Amino acid sequence: MVTKRWWSYLTGYLIIKVVGEDLEAFINMAITRGILLWDIHRVNENVLIARVRISGFFGLRHISRRTRCRIRIRNRCGFPFLVVKLRKRKMLAVGSILFLVILYGLASFVWVVRVTGSNNLDAEMILQAAKRHGLRVGTLRSQMDKNLIERQLKEDFPDATFINLQIRGTMVTIEIVEKVLPPEVEKERQPANLVARRDGVIEDVVVMAGQAKVKPGDTVKTGQLLISGIVPPAAEQEQMPGVMLPPSTETGPKYVHARGLVRARVWYEGYGDAYLIEKEAQDSGEKTAQFWITLGGKEVMVWGPRTIPFADYRLTQEEKVWSFANQQWRINVPPIRLRVVNYYGVVEHQVVLGSEGAIRVATERAKKQIQEQRLEWSETVQEDLEIMTVEDANLVRIRTRLEAIEDIGREKLFSHP
Image 1 (cartoon, rainbow, N blue to C red):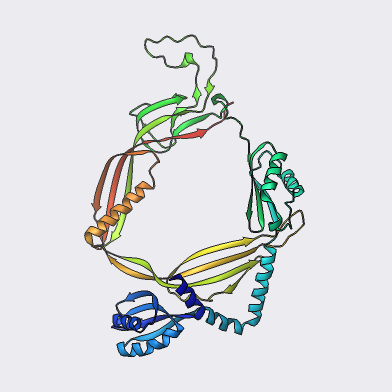
Image 2: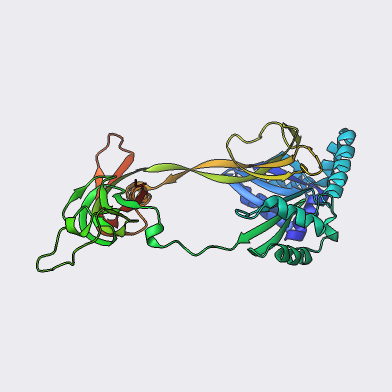
């Protein structure tokens, strides 16, 4: 099938629109006569869009008269039509070919060398070492020995645990991973409190570091202190009945990075709407593209339609950049940016949900609204759904209430005197 599509592009094909009441007979007669139709998309009962080769288009005229269908050409695609356009713009064709040849030649060289991941190591020293080992601006990519340069750089910089050369087009990135120091001990960490990230009623508190400021049954607000990173001396702390603590030598408070688990009961409310008959956008099968080139801050369209031939469409973009600037060689050529914008025709369809379908869709939307607000660790306790009364008879609105238990603690750093 892929080979047939390529051959169709080389020989040229048409996007046609067929209007008539007997479209099935039109398609069957085309197949029996060996005329290839593909990407057939039926817009409605009397209209379809398809693709056909130039050689097969003329055979459709007799079929259209037999089936009383009308054929309209929507678009002309393929190599023959491209040649016709280029004949009218010969200088553009010559310039495009020359540009591609020059671009291919320039892409064979290294124009940018950069260093990433060097926090403690000097990036300039790494670039100078790479230059000594043969990695410099203007070097042919085919002449570079990537593995050898990596080994030599590792010998020059033993403080780096990993060095990798990543080649992308005309850019070479030297990726550095430095040796990581052991983690700091707990008392050297910056002190922090644990505060509430949302309203709730405390269920239980487990303190691993710090001092609890709430207890089960307390109602807390967003931002309220849960576990303090300031621990007073033992003499000032509340003593447990029947427990004797040794005399403390501490005279002042201790500052720690508070850690713990604070579970609270929280509530959510979400709403979802759905109509009994909703509109849904679907691709019509038609597509076109624009090619834009940016050079020196100016963007110019080099290929594609000036106006989009679709009333409704969706688009996707792809972008590629070639950079030639380099401070060592004092090259200040502006980057070349190629942007491809693909347009896909969209046709709206009506989807009849009905009462039950609208309730289902509205419920899913209400639950999705709540799910986006919930924390990563969340345990559902109870969930209630309610169909609300609205003025519009074609609209269904669902309200859902969710009760859950979540760990609402959030770290908040602070500095101590």
